[in-house]
Image (cartoon, rainbow, N blue to C red):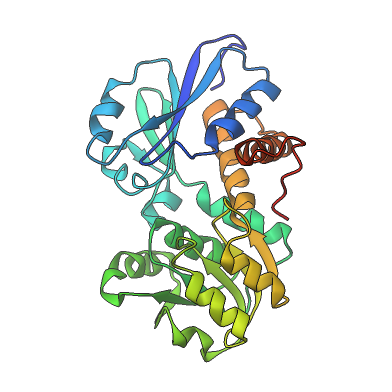
Amino acid sequence: MAGEPGATRRAAVLGSPVAHSLSPALHRAAYRELHLAGWRYDAIECDQQGLPALLGSLGPEWAGLSLTMPLKRAVLPLLDYTEPLAAEVGAANTVVFADGQRRGFNTDVGGIVTALSEAGVTPDGNVVVLGNGATACSALAALRQLGATDIAVAVRSPGRAEPLLAVAGRLGVRVRLIALGPDLASRRWQLLVSTIPASAAEPTAARLSAGELTAAAVLDVGYDPWPTALAAAAAKAGSSVISGYEMLVHQAAGQVELVTGLQAPAGVMHAAGLAELARRRGISDGSATLR
């Protein structure tokens, strides 16, 4: 799929807003390391309404796309093929153009699985996911792969969780909805996965700080700025903390492999993303860390 080393191929991340995305830094670093001199990767602002026209405007030089919010669900009816995992989760974060088709995949699930596995987290006890969006659905699939079959999901509005419950049904995962609030303190969690914005997780962080809530491990899909209030509170409480940056890098590595057909240089991508975060923060020595 990569073609000739000097072939002109294009890829991009689409979303709204998209200017903050680290995907260009990660993918460009991979292309350099893989000696794909003719490849370019851009960030393109695109919302749900503009997605059909944008997809229709792409020429044969396009190899693939990364999708961020709010496009992961909106792209599904526009695809010619959807891999079974993306269909189960109801979200595709990757589009590969091959043989005249738009082919959709989900690498968020693999990113979460790898991030948790590398941290030595095995979710075989009480697990709770905060949120009910596309990333929460990917978290359910990742937790299923790691052996969890009974998962609590904390939400503000149970009536808006129908899509997530449908995903759980397709995955064969038992989900128990609880209120995003005091109900979280009902038990000691082995793993807490937050897929909600950092500001929305601040009350949960306060409960961790007050000792009202305990979790052996916390994965916060946020990563910039880091630490989030939730991550800081979890670390202070003695929890093992996993940054969403680890998920980000591994899902991007999966995208590179799908789009180019080559093994992704995950270590190089990890370093490039940290360097870009350091640049944005004005850290001249490149010492930004999320660990």
